Amino acid sequence: MRPNLIRHKHIWQSLFLTLCLTLLTSFVQSIGALAQETTNIAYSARVVGDNERARILIDFNKEPIFKIRYLANPNRIIVDLEQTKLAFADEQLTARGILSDIRYGIMSEDKSRIIFSLKTPAVLEDQQLQILEGDTYRLVMDVSISEQDDFDAVLKEQNWEVVETNPSNDESVEKGSRIRVSENKNSDKFVLVLDAGHGGIDGGAEGRNGAIEKDITLDFVNDLQKAFEEYDGIELLLTRDSDQFMSLSARVQIARDAEADLLISIHADSIRQRSLRGASIYTLSREASDEFASNLADAENLTDVLAGLHIEDAPDDVTGILVDLARRETQGFSDVMADRIVDDFKGQIRLLNNPHRRAGFRVLLAPDVPSVLIELGFLSNLTDEKLLTDPKWREKTTKLLAKSISEYQKAVLRDRK
Image (cartoon, rainbow, N blue to C red; front, side):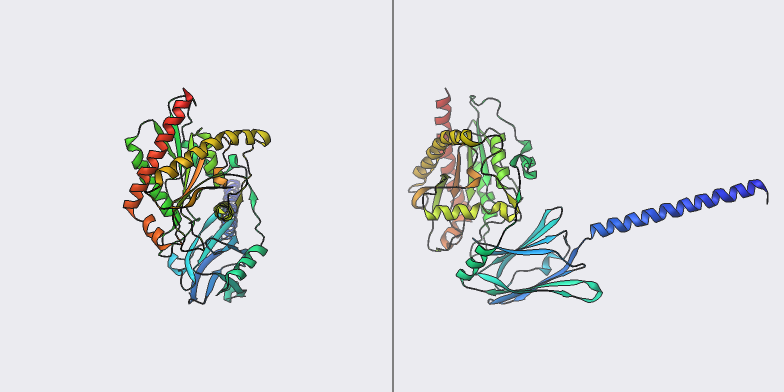
């Protein structure tokens, strides 16, 4: 064989081997990427049951790593899944029987969460992991109605393992990066941050007729924006303007980054006393003014726990005595704002007895921003639920609140001069 033919043969063999190696490498990488992408897939789910019990079935292509825990106010069962993609159709996981609602989503790169809201206290009676054909797995959970005391006992015994997060590093804080910081605190500019409570996977309280707190608070904040159209000199900023989850630390940080003059956080909780109704206004205090206020704060402070987060009692850049001093100053402004709202609501909006109350709400923790939390009413009460979803009531209430804030703004600006 001539030398040039031999040389060409070797070249083609080399090219062929290189091509094979490239294809093999690409194939191995694709398989690895596919294996990583499909660490686990929940590909099918269904719920069966009645008003006494429910059976939840979720099928996985691999053995799932999961934790099941409970939350109260409202009562919920939480299922956390490690490195799992939720690929079942929405209609496969439909609430029925003792389940009032089911929500699910991705909480982080390595965790997904399913939240089962309960119409009545209920506990996990049994759970088992079955191996199906093809080495697939089925998680079976049997939930049965229980006494509230039994639910509370399980709730008390559980252990939430939460991740410590620095508010300044929270991904949700990026949502506030669009906010324009006030250049001069002594100017005539008044920065107001409106916070619609809850959002995204954290729906908040649920009414007996289906109203959801996260929707009510966002609708109210949107209408409150409109009510401010007749007032000048107020720069409005929102912590959220859509159905998105935002941690409590992020809400606080947005107000601080904006050097806000006031933070108003809007809520509409649900409580066990269904006959109780009316609005109430809360300011921050280490000691709760009463047990009712303490319980509400405990329920609201679970927002971050719901997302697997936990925040510090104070931002990192202000600690100890500096925080206490700042809070003393801003606390006076917060109390003035709360009392003004109460005065303007009286005779116009139904109020609780002693409507200005105090407790340790985390969303009010900004030491340098006067902050007030407003409970518009209680979704556990049918009358309140009807009002909270009534556009006319919302328009009336937002106009009253806008007036209160405007009067407070004028007083603040007078004090600056």
